[in-house]
Length: 380
Figure 1 (cartoon, rainbow, N blue to C red):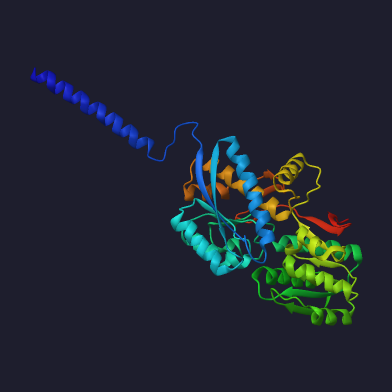
Figure 2 (cartoon, helix red, strand yellow):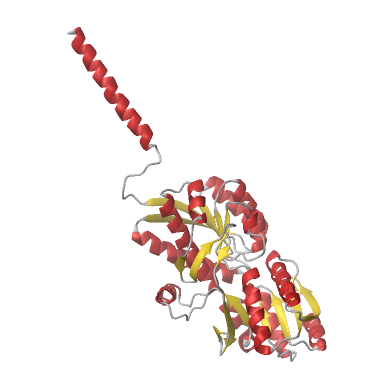
């Protein structure tokens, strides 16, 4: 009898060991086959205040993509949206809340490069992947290995738009105008100046302004007095549209080449006829003959009653890129998600074919557009 009890005890121990070792091998992070990857994703965007037009388009793009992703059932995303009001300190506060209180797997945003310069280091230090969808200033992804963007940087967009304008209009002498108190507009100006010098254009004058300024007559009077062949302007749409309006009223009819901040229907809405002839470079063209683009435009219009702009399209693609990375990672683990994002190559989105380079920056080709007849059209 004693031997029988010993045998049973030995068998019990053996079975326990097998179960225990099997459980250790599987690990606590393993999920049953077929179970969706669930992730909480933070969003930092301008919901109120100046620049809310950007934020509205961006959050609309995120939500439309989220609904599509969740409907498939392989990845389930819960968006946590925070308002930065376009201020760096508010964006940082929002990031800290999302990272420490909400415990998000990743962050999308913020809207402005000025905000990302503050938020990016915080996310990077915390090991949280962050993807800018509208941050185009130089050096964004160099903040750290957790910082990504899918927004076409000014360093790729501006050379394309200026190059085509110079060729089309035979520009020789130009005036530069930019906002000197914002990282984004300053970066755009730096690229405009660099490209102008590389093309050996004569820069007649460089004029500066501040965010929120409403009267640009002093700067434009100086520009008009020098009779440039064209004006290169780095501004957000609020200031940019007013600059266009005042320039045309003052008789400045030469071509305007705008930075990335001009890539919004808001410019046409505010400047109206004065926006005619504005040239910009963008990854987005709503009238491209592509089934994916047509489907997105139709869904967006149905959901929000307006056509999507570049900022909505970039946000839409970014959420799909994030969802694909979550699926590849197999979990919402921040480190695994970072690595899966970095491996993104040849993603076919509404912007076209997209990849991250070794610095987690954009690899794609821009479209150069001109405003004609109250709409953006291909510039040829």
